[in-house]
Length: 198
Image (cartoon, rainbow, N blue to C red):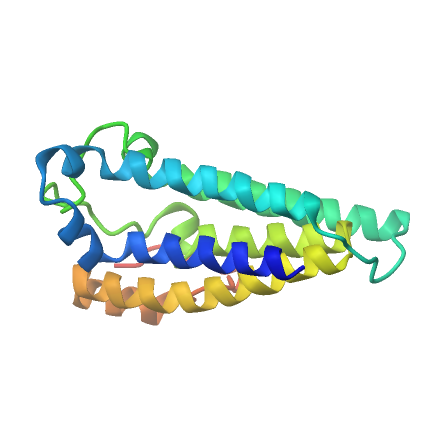
């Protein structure tokens, strides 16, 4: 179990470290890194996630409770809801740019407008919300000590990461983001869509 916890902490720590604006600016001094930073970052994220899953499969896990048909339905519902939210949220972003396939420089010389439509009109961080639903559903579906460790560390990471993300967005968009904060909840949607956020 300790190896799983350490692997997750290193994965989340590296993920946040490489996403920090100051680190990006330092690392992209060369034109080559500037062009391919996003692809490299995403590749490290995927490989790291596969490593976490591999360590999870090696970890001894004890059942916390016995699953029933109802817990399985609830767990599947939560997991698929999370995947659906993430999918819907991604529609609001330029996916090729998000993946780094457009080779857009990470110093944002190309101005990107603040996303406030689609799922972003319900919650400011729909990808984080979808991830919460996904890990909660996975824990209900597979209620064991290993999944509990993954769920708890993921929630802690998201709660810390969302604060860092908010500071970065305020720096990037200024008053527009401060106004957006007042109108749309950060992580848990209220169910009421904001028609004209800005």
